[in-house]
Length: 393
Image (tube, rainbow, N blue to C red):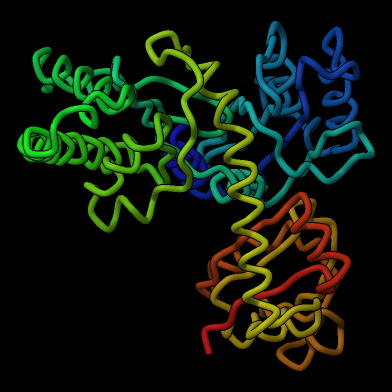
């Protein structure tokens, strides 16, 4: 499983190698007819042919184009997106990296059939898009039979075994028995006084057990740097556990998901299929909430948003997932929606693709990027001028 730190490490490595760097992103989704029989490989070759610098001689070594094409020989990616990077270090040694991601990335150049190839500054914005869009998610599957913990990120799902290993078999047995009593209504059938005594003992024991379980969840969330949690199970049980969480864990709970099959039979693939529609819904709702907040007290439209960005006023910069627009940038780095707006801050403004400068711009100004898609993306483009921002002041 790819970890967010892996992407950050790759980014640091590319920046250390310096420029120029070859960056290639390609749609290689094996389920799409246009990728049958390795057709994606031909599209990458065609894209590389249009970059003459890649064919420059390298003493006795292959050209950069030859090295990258050799890397692709025999590759049969079981992923949606293939990312390739190649650059020389100060000793003229060629470094190449290949990354396969089981998610779609915003590859905006459709001229080569879902291939984006650029030579110069490392094109790392799509990786940052992925980190922003696909938060690392913990999935707790809880039932009267067993509890399991899964981790989901960038389209991959894996089980983290051993999370609850310190809970004894006797405690699991008691939990199963208690759960069955609650489900069956057996406690309600006892006389009121007897039921009260049983309820008191049961509640105290359940409270201690769930406090222990909550502590174990807190540990794995911290160790794995998990951003959000999905609680899968019977409603009463996930609610009780959620009540045992501290504030930091409660903030991470994104949804409660009903359990419809025996959890011990879950495979990671089945967990993935169960949670992806839930995550999609959660993400789009959060994006719509952010856009509503910006309508009330933020800025939107290219000119106003870029001006607020240049002034350092933007806390969050909201952009469409398919980022295919241009802005103007001066030699000193200042930007504007028009040449005139940019040159109020500097000289020699030229038009640039926003996707090529969005990352250094946001970092230099301390602004967090938020990319929206689906219905929020449509709203951002059709009703809010294509970009928006939440203000610091």
